[in-house]
Image 1 (cartoon, rainbow, N blue to C red):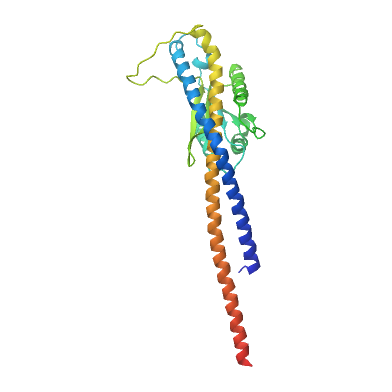
Image 2 (image 1 turned 60 degrees about the vertical axis):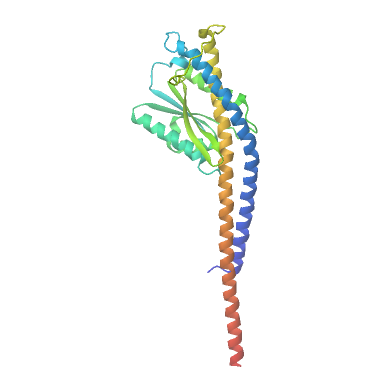
Length: 291
């Protein structure tokens, strides 16, 4: 049985841990507000960009002169998985859920005889995927030094992906990230970004006709690379909000668990101390009676 001194040290250590987790929860909560606002503000722009490109591309998708980012390479053999995760842990299943979705997609593709490559954005995803797919990771970007995400960071990632596509290194690129829904709900998401998937209009929806200047075939080669960067930027912002939401929840749970441990440890300490006092009293009384 542990001594009273060891128990006091254990209780003090648990209380110190509780203070740390509580502080991390408060920091995550304060950062979540800004991250959530940024993610929600980026959604309408990204969705409208997709809608505009879908409208322009609907006529050009089947034409021989359609841009490769829209038409693809004509093959479906080599897949690049762009996996965006966090730079830090202590966020519950946030990172592992994104990596799990990417692993499942990679395994399914390899079972079909496809070749899979990884582009990792974020340290945690890279560390997890490296254990199993080290030779298939073609690039890794670390954003630990970035204090605030900007469009330029997404643009750099998009340019690297685009350069590899133009060099013929892959045929299809899928983006993996976690979409923020709420503090307790983050949804791992897979989105194909090369070639761009054009969704069919909903049944009964009225198609709007637009006139463009310059013509569609001149606009698309400019818009498609821009859209690639916009979708990556949206994923980074969604990930950032999801990370702080997951970390806030994880630290709240850790704080509650620490409180429960302190309660149990204190109860054991008091019972042990009372038993020792009772034993000493019995010894004193027994000694007095013997005299």
